[in-house]
Length: 133
Image (cartoon, rainbow, N blue to C red; front, side, top):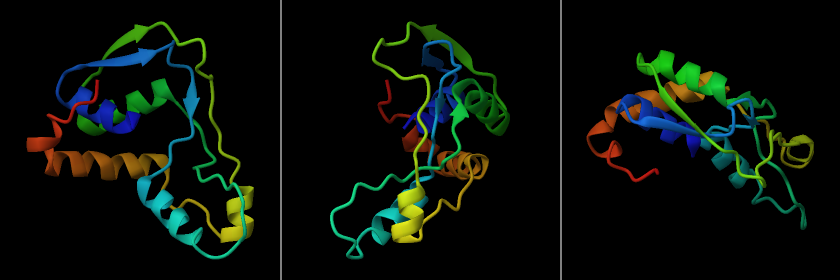
């Protein structure tokens, strides 16, 4: 959800709220890859907990810089205190998804952001008003 928020906030000149110092990393995954993994999980594999993710965490500051470049606008970043329960990094172990579902993500982070920014531009008239804060 944060990539959409960041694209919206930067595109519309709104402040980008970052909880913590921005050095935390997240395992962002393109929604189309998650949809493919969910469909692949319909095959009978018994009861299993299977992680779907990109397996390539990205730092929040790096994500913001890339979005700035893609929307050609500088972000107004506002840092807030990090929530004590927040983790510094997320990183999905997708080995079970590979083994049981023959699933791996196909859309890299930058490619996914390019698609998101294109989609946002095409739908900006209403997407700019989606409540994200």
